[in-house]
Length: 465
Image (cartoon, rainbow, N blue to C red; front, side, top):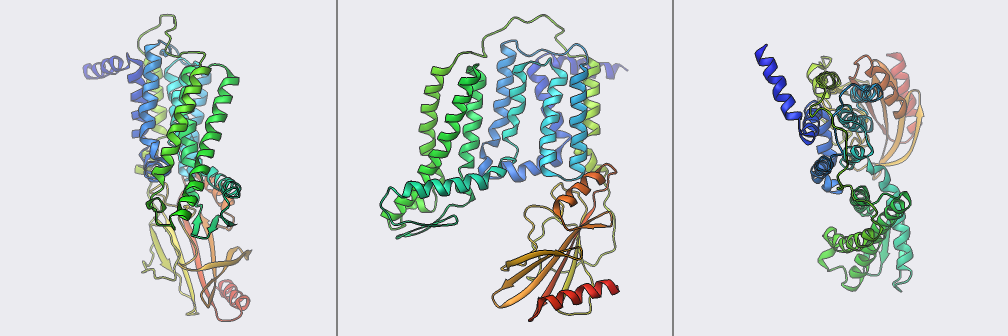
């Protein structure tokens, strides 16, 4: 009993400083959701587009430090029903989406859990929301904008090149000039400048701009300026390539060049922002005196709910279904599939047909048939057309003169799906019952001449079995 009281006293002492309480919440949420952190490391911290991710936690804690110094963050003295309800919903969403392995779902849910955990412990006000939500710039959810920004960049560069006098031909995302061909790839979309500009401008607005009109104006200039900077970067690189006959070192390493253009823009932006400033969040405010420590019952409830929704705990308790399967050596005539737990070959009568079943035990949140890096086509094959037939997705493909039909479908709980959305919806429903083991059925059919007859022969053989 003495040891328990000692631990409680240590915890209370630790919580006496609001910033340390926030730090403890961040540490606890992170520790209890290591599987989610692994996916963030894989898709955010380890990705050039999100190279700013390392700074986000430091900036967020610094903003909380500012609020603490200004007396704008205080502990709750009693449980808040609305805050508790939102917190429980966030924990439930994390439990379901992580069980269903829905990436966007558990990334947003873990952020919601973090934000609502802080809201559970501290009195809600307009100031504590932003430092909590600032973690959204770590999440790799911004990629949804990449293709749109890429298309805009292509059109913008085409427009700018029309004023240079250099013969330019644009097809798709390829720009052809006399000196050579440039590809405006996904990395040239300007997404990294867009994210950084949005993050930095949001910090400035939080600290110094109160007027909604001024804030929107500042955000608009920041975003448009970031995109225009990227368009100028691409156009300048094309011009440099033309005038140096593609021999400039910038043709191989042009990322740094973009920052040389972007940083001066940000300096000008903040110079202008200082003229818009109408508030200083550092100004101390008078707050009513409350207990310097949080309510013990709130802390205990908070830790209990975080533990129950923990993805780390789910990972430890999850036991994959042990299936007797034949491990096979994959060759070049196989799909590119990541993080499967096992693969077996289904025996068929025809030696021109390959039937493989990939099993996924969901030990890793990325261990699933719908992982974005998976490619059902063997290396080198190009898609001719696709269709759905007899409960299978059919992809007609070609490699040089070789024609083939690739069939695939998804399975969970002995039910198969062809539509990826329906498959994800099924995973969400099964997640409520902790069913997460999935499969990918993959078939390769060689077409000598008539693909249709080959497909019908396969379907007939499956019906006979």
